[in-house]
Length: 434
Image (cartoon, rainbow, N blue to C red):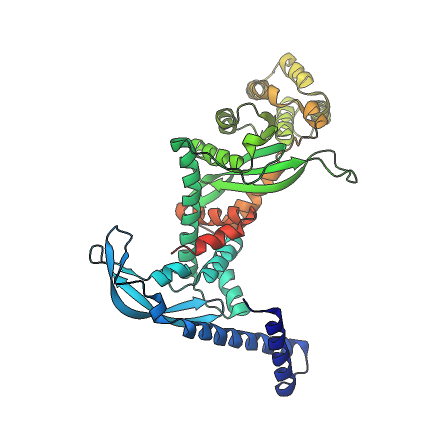
């Protein structure tokens, strides 16, 4: 590494050169010129690095092991271009060829985290992170403007595909290791109370709208004494999202919860709306957890029934719904259930609404002990996962005119969930995979 003293010397030389050779009148002119000079210096330094790579030092003998299980023979030294964040460089390194699988191998490339494509790991990691946030067109413009780095949209898609596939493979290894091979999942974090919130968003993939199942796992901690909050605060949030079956998503969600320390948490809380698949997976993977039906989802059902009972816009509808929502929050579902059981429908529409809502509240009554939950400081609304549906899925996959293949959307989701979970180092590590 370069010492701080050497860096300071370089800064002094650069400052002296600028004072002696440059005269600009505005901040804008200075910024533009200095950025251009910085890019030119970066290119020169990367070129110096490439010159330091002695081809002979990349030689690892007459033969090296090939991925196919056979051996590849040394076939001389060959050059290649690498596009880095600091400019393009050309390096010469030892090249090996396998007669069995007809593939070429460079051990030096592998050590540097290079694939057959031109991009350096740093470029791939940056492109992956940017594409998880922005459209491909926006990424192209941003890279060109800030770094003078040209990465075509097709190349961005290749990089996203590569990184997304690697992220999913790593996740699948954890899932399959636990469910099929009884391998232990080692927690990354731990907390006394862990929340598992689940919902689904919609995205247009392969010509139709499909559910993107979404979850957020986070620790709930008591608010600071100086805070006005009475319920848990969300920290250490990790996100999962995928277009897949309920069963597979349940396993994905469990694996994420296990990595977040579920097995060592004192209490696990599952929050969701009334979708049957959520509670089926909760029973399968989170037995013994505190199950909470999203309070605001329950209130939507109260208002829906009030409309069927009293009519849209009536004062009685508003009064009944507001009263029942308040009692549900402060006293639990008993009063609401009594009111529903006593009700006598007058029309077929009212009868159907009554049947549906009574069934809904009866089946979820054990998930609506809101006074008890609130007394413990627990969240009773699934706002975190509803926000995740908008931020993870909606903001990236549902912009105007967007149409995705299932694979393309999944690669973006893999990158976006990793990014939002604070796992940028994971993206950078996998970008080095050759």
